[in-house]
Length: 95
Image (cartoon, rainbow, N blue to C red; front, side):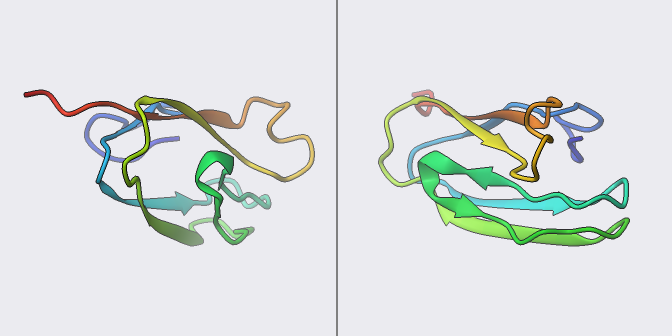
């Protein structure tokens, strides 16, 4: 579930970024089960969190990646199949 202005309370929110952005994603455990976050197109993965309110984060640059949608998901067996996935969307900056 998203935390923050535009994504507050949204389950598996679309995360909008732009080429050249520095991105910080924080995974906050809300249920006490093991979770992580993996972005295969960026080869980025958080460590696992298993306690309520435990956090982990990843920081990366989008670089000059072409605009488009990139999946993120939890790699714990069964979690992605249960719907724990979303999209990180690279959008061109408006001129």
